[in-house]
Length: 373
Image 1 (cartoon, one colour):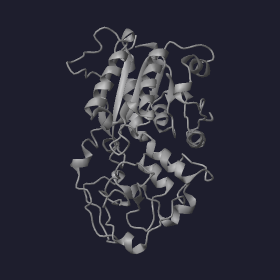
Image 2 (cartoon, rainbow, N blue to C red):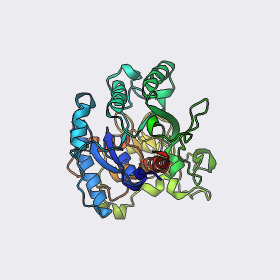
Image 3 (cartoon, helix red, strand yellow):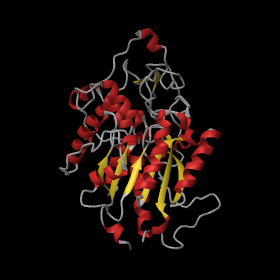
Image 4 (cartoon, rainbow, N blue to C red):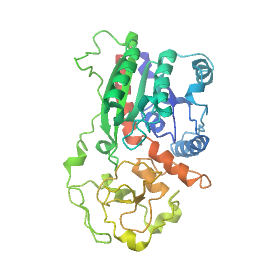
């Protein structure tokens, strides 16, 4: 077994946001040694949330964003000096989910020409400059759907493939115990010079990395008899075969616990009449906005902001910050400061990688590490 597997591997985290992906890697046994987030409010939310969560785990290390510059303004030399003041180690990893609005089907669709799309190019540049042992990149499925974007991505990967074995997979958070249908692409790369001969068998399609599979929830979207759309206000019974942990109901905070549950009394007011609200069925989530979630079904992809409004299944209000965090698989020990802007909290939450999915990917990376020289 490689000595690499005996120690906590340090991780550089780019586009850290609220730190949900970082949490997954920490839970899997990695050590986050450097973080980067350009949005200063996100950086404050990250520091508070991760610090409170770490304390609950018996870890007194205070969280902070080490660098709040844009990735375009940070040199690789600066990153190494901040992350590894005692010198660059033999082994470390890089993780990140570059902003995806330019690739999202609900976004601008500017692709790599957009300002956010260009950050994906810079992320690959940093990989080649920093030369980590491995990297993990997360992004929307739109990155591989449009022909022009897919071809340009292929050209970017070809550059990196000179030094790294790269594999990718589309994963759905619902299949990993998260009550949310959220499909994302994950790209994993390991340095070729560190892979033992014969450890990686590349097939014609380049599929070699053992991406995680959770058999308990695999194909969850079609596997269960989910709750059906019904008029607002009806009394419902949970379908017997549906796991409660995959339902929105499992994330809702009861009225008698709102005052004692962190961030549970933080939600936007609704500027719509009760009559109009009542006309929206429970489970009517195919609307462009004001989607009413179903208590006995998973949430659609969290993408809070602009006109995307998710309504409580059976109360006249929007989801709270705590409920949104739970839908992203974030534990209640992750607490956000009440005084910071509500809009920033919801945007940050919607941008994140669901924690159980991040942990599953991180565990797959960790299990692959014994093949490293």
